[in-house]
Length: 309
Image (tube, rainbow, N blue to C red):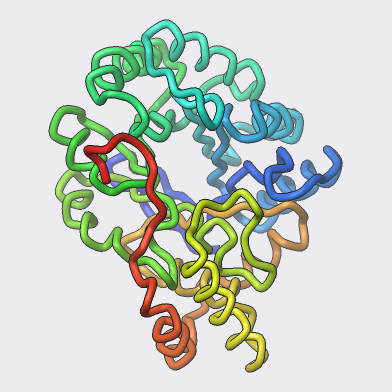
């Protein structure tokens, strides 16, 4: 496993992190025993950064992660969870809801404290509520020792200049914005580096777009994006290459990104992802795949308030 320093936090984190949404069944059903085995395998393979949220499978991800972490030494992992988004159509960064939500998260995880708390998908509510209420609540939690560091996440990249103009953050989680199909996060990396932020790239396979099996039915990408990604996957398969492995290698090869965060349903998927750590992607394959994806390059599906589109 490779490790990188997560910006101003100083945490030495694994270059590959485990996204725990899959452990709650978001990408297909699995037993609790299978989920626990996947998380334990991640720790055994040297992954020390775990991420979850109450949104994922409506708190099931946190509950399962809490069961898996029972009896695991707190010095063996860093964990982040989130506040503010509780269902696909429920975002609430009010002071009381954030305080209550954080306490519920800590109860489900049983980890004592969060290393990082993330203001989750801030694009869905007025920024004033995020700053004046949500951030105030997590700053109080930090003062109480319940969280160590604070970050924000979301899909549209315009959220980051907006919040960083008003808030002193430690970490950002950006998702689906650094993949074989979309590298638009490169445009805001200088801003992140100016603030010495820890940079976490989630969904390096575009929430399933860049996999042999393709995305789940709920995926919001348009048909042209899905078709281009399908063609890219078929191109890889015809040459004996798994596009998911190529995509993981591509994402982790960028040293300006500290953690590449992806989910895994099984121990075998965890081990497959670990095999991509430290492996330089085939440059010719990357170039060929990106050429296939050129008509949809840097395209993302819409989400959030109009000012961020």
